[in-house]
Image (cartoon, rainbow, N blue to C red; front, top):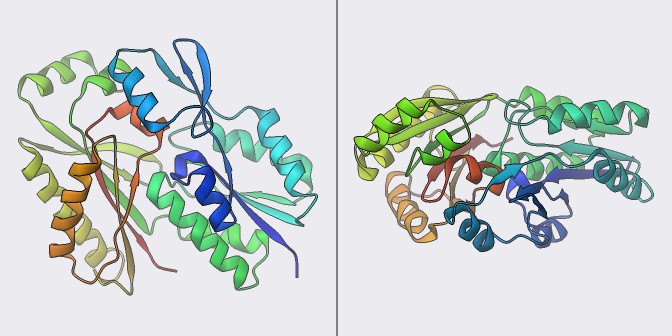
Amino acid sequence: MSKVAIVTDSNSGITQSQGKEFGIFVLPMPFMINEEPFLEDIDLTQDEFYQRLEAGADVITSQPSPESVLNLWEEILKEYDEIVHIPMSSGLSGSCQSAIMLSEDFEGKVQVVNNQRISVTQRQSCLDAKLLVERGMNAVEIKDFLEKDKFNSSIYIMLDTLYYLKKGGRITPAAAAIGTLLKLKPVLTIQGDKLDAFAKARTATQGKSIMINAIRNDMENRFGGARADNMWLEIAYTKDRKAAEQFKEELLKEFPGFDIQMDPLSLSVSCHIGPGSLAVACCKKI
């Protein structure tokens, strides 16, 4: 039986210490902040990141350098026979495409999964991959399984402000101005590879209610039932852990019996949507 390693990037929300605990290798995502390079969770903490973001620093996300990816793979292959590499969604970053190109020199030993996941759903893919390794699957079988499973998840994100989407050129300044003027809380969705507008809420309470109804609808109508034995339920947030804890309590009333995973959103996503965002996600259990 071949020895298979699981690799992901820090967009999964898996920290370096959690990676060691899970037995998953985590590639830190690079950032340029005011033209100075940083690596997520190596020399840039969540707190430092938000301090700089809110102080108006120029934050640019980047993809891991080809060198850092190749070095990690080569190091791992000294100990393992094969690698399953699970990067963030190809619709949100070029790092998936880059990894696919780099893997071509490894004669099939590195399988790059393009399953359109990000944050807590990407994390769940990594844990699923570990489970599939334990079930005796090889790297090609795991990649095929995860790619067939890719649409069995969804995410809804409520933004506190449109400022960062506007700053990053993701929406027009006019749309952002109207949203800010009306104090709207936009709810976005990630289904497959796209980040799309889903709804506009007038208040955070209404926004949370929209997200809860949407996730319940997905579970019941797309994924075979809103039950704890069928679905994983997850929360992600930017900066405001207290608001996330409160949201968790509300979700537990709506979905009793679920064990809800809660994680900060990765910084690559946070820099585009800003602090104070709340997300709810679900993944079908394999």
